[in-house]
Image (cartoon, rainbow, N blue to C red; front, side, top):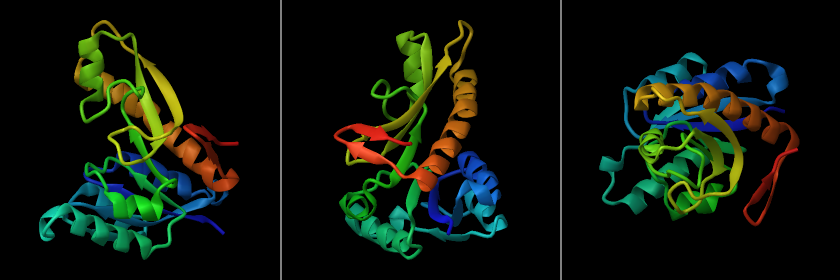
Length: 201
């Protein structure tokens, strides 16, 4: 029985597409059952629909406060009984209700080598600091901003002539296969968390 994935997006969904492509192989062990977004008309939703996944939108502006939005998002995702929930460029921080339901199985990928350079400008901050290695981090989401236990990291050298755009693109090229590899390994083999240490067989 294939593991059930719910993927959350806010934009084009290139990481989502990498997962959809991987799931086309029965040996991968997972299927994307639903794709959710915080706004309508994004390409990520269209990618999901084309692949046969159900889609849904839960907009922050449709609710009186973030707690109500968080509860609605939690309820919507729970309908699909996911084994893993994956943030693939989902630009909203979830709240306590969501983490209570999916903590320990909600994954995010960040375009920096955490704990360095959290937040939305990882590559820009890395360049400004002058580091020689940037990269991507896959982690379990907790209540902080990019502070969860780290599942995997991949390093990407910073070139002397890099701009934010060129570095970001090279990080994406490394980020996608890491995401696909570890989601597959987690659904097929499981994982353990001891303190901040995540072990994937």
